[in-house]
Length: 417
Image 1 (tube, rainbow, N blue to C red):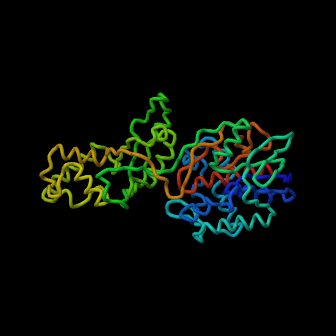
Image 2 (spheres, rainbow, N blue to C red):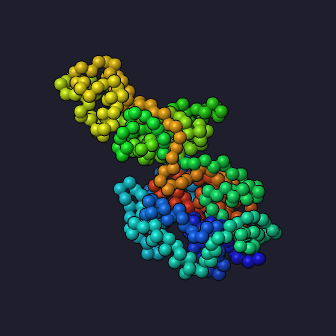
Image 3 (cartoon, one colour):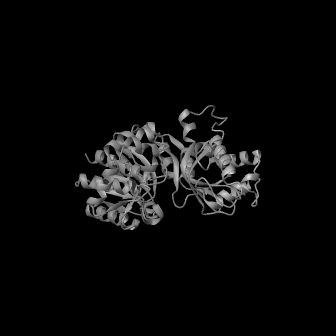
């Protein structure tokens, strides 16, 4: 039986961040990380296309929490303790400079996730954090005032235990045995599979600012959803047409906020897209003006409403307007159909695809069972939880990492003192 003062289960972002901060703040403690893989920090490595999207340039806690479909209310207090600015300062003090991109995402200036990994490994070594790879945890038991762990490489005992294993079903099962409630995990952050003539031949086309609505925002099983849930099942932003359907922030945001509802529907549902963010009536008025102003021009040839040309042309054809039709020749029905395609186009979604390497899961330890002032379990003293092992997840853009840094830092501070 090997004894450590503190054991961190999970060698990912939250696990390393917590272990380093504990060892730094309380150098007398023997701190060890147990990682089941042959190496740690795998998600850090692939995040942001291998550049590591460390956090997001949002410096107001009340605004930052809006990016968390699960955890919004609970994270407000923690973000007042450790926030985006603190993350930047932490890395910069250790020689990692960060930069802010136009969309607010923050990366190391080096553009390489290896910079973050090297920083963690250097800090862990400097503060004598023991990293034990290939240590898969098989059981967790409370014996008097200590935690006993049975692993694939022997048994461990510790006073304080921090679990930062992300979306790991085996660890969730062990936590259930300790009495914790696990919210059923479902995928978050995914793209929509759509087969539709209107987008068939135009992958790569981006509509810069659209509104996407989930149709029929009621699940007959659940009765009425809360007003907030109905509201968030609508999102806006850029939309990218892909080889298999649709992606980009407008879609990813909807997939995150609708994760539970969309899983219930088995990823078969309908969305309504407003490509121009105008009402049907306003759009119709503009089309009538174009009919008079561009009478002799063909409708198909030139795009309007700042839409990409190929998307415009596909929506025109979908409105029963052929390539030779002139504006002057449009009848009332064609004008209304085109206005409808532009402002309330309905698409059938039939399945989902993982968004690049951003595998995020909604689900985890029930938030009611965690003290968010310390990230300690309310059921067990000296058991702490940080990162995606708890039922918190965010939209893409560095927000999931910020949750990891914040929870890990606060847990570390409480463990160290």
